Image 1 (cartoon, rainbow, N blue to C red):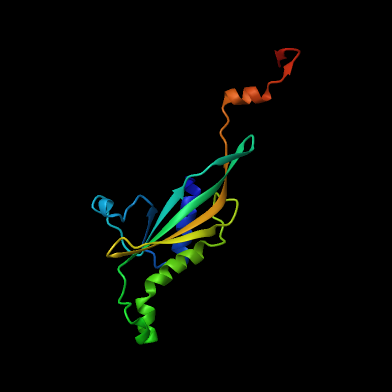
Image 2 (image 1 turned 60 degrees about the vertical axis):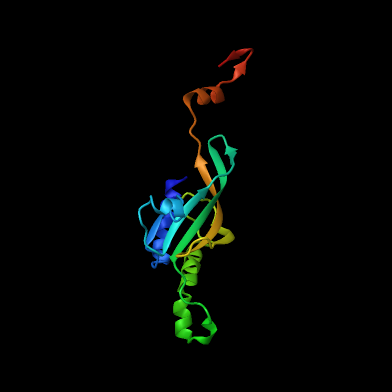
Length: 170
């Protein structure tokens, strides 16, 4: 995980979606088993999950990775949405506020380039987790290209810079 990228994403969400109260790295905080062990969090909350993947050698000193992030937007319980079409427009807006929070978080990240990335973030998937009575979870998955400078050891530098001439290394 690139700390620059994580901090950049946090700052962007805070600036563009100020309704979000808590932002943290994802560590299954809202699952039933972990909810008892983890510190409580305020909703709406955002948890940032970094996905793994393959690194590709782009240059002797740089590697590229098509990085993935899952942004978990966690809201507390649904408002009364039954027969919402019969309610006033004001009440409809209030009862569907949870949908706007996930959308605001998405709009703050889509086509934006966080620190540490070499391309803009593109949403590639949205999923919903309906396994909890008191929580509404929207998960947006994004991809962007991350470049990282490779640390080259002294031994590797010697091998890279050595040239064999007439059976001898110079």
